[in-house]
Length: 388
Image (cartoon, rainbow, N blue to C red; front, side, top):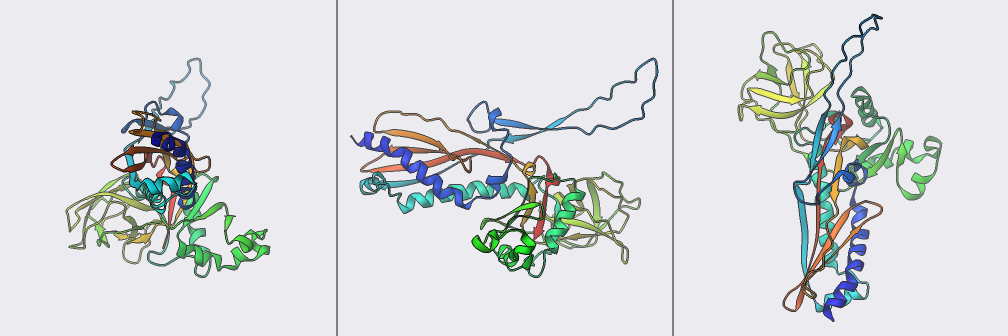
């Protein structure tokens, strides 16, 4: 009888859990998930490859009897590995079980599901400023944007256009501080500026200036290394495309993976506008070389200053193709009746696939939500940090 009751309420618990989960997500909602249909095995470390086309050069057409050789191109791929298998377990006694049967999801269940959902969201944010993450940058580190105007977003949009980010769909994902500032601007309040009254009625910015604006409490802060104002250390300088350079300048402190750096030129001479993401360094507390992405878009000269943008809130202007994400539906199984039961539901709005496994213990039931997923940054050019 207990097994039958448990079986009947599995769907109720999963469905109610997903309703709780969907309200706190941002990157999970906007990431490209077109590759999930290529998953061949719902097991940890299964891989889905995201194709990245190779550049094709043009040439002058010269009519001739013999056609010219066809230029060979080699497309690459970026793997999405289902490396993340997370669960959120909790135990419920028979009283709690009866509450679920009446349609009441215990508070502990809400917390377990919230923790799992936040973990998925935080994982995607970690990709954004992790190895091979986004390198575009606008705004000022340590200063919440949009206090007086939209210049930080407009600068970010300019960087996005220069980096060839796709035009649509774009998303501006901001934290609560940035949203509070933005909602105070006339450009987002006045119907004559907006073209509608939705912002006045429901407090949501919506789609404005070429992006859908979304607020989430999960926007993290990138903690930068203390190093800054290193100098290029090479008499011949470095050519376009270079990704590793030697530096000097004294004991200026370490740099962290994900730090955003900029070549600011010699004293009194302006450098170039592109920013770069630190991939690795050599030298410990005193850095002697830096590897970064992308390759240099302009040549740099000996003794040119290298500035570190410092720690910043990672408000993000991104395109749907900037982050790819795959989630494997986990298998439903019914093992020994009364011992272990599972059920799976896929939320139609967020697309999250959660499995709920129920195991009977000594006068209590263990409930465990779990999910199998992975992600990648196939287009690092398609993300601009609008710093806070």
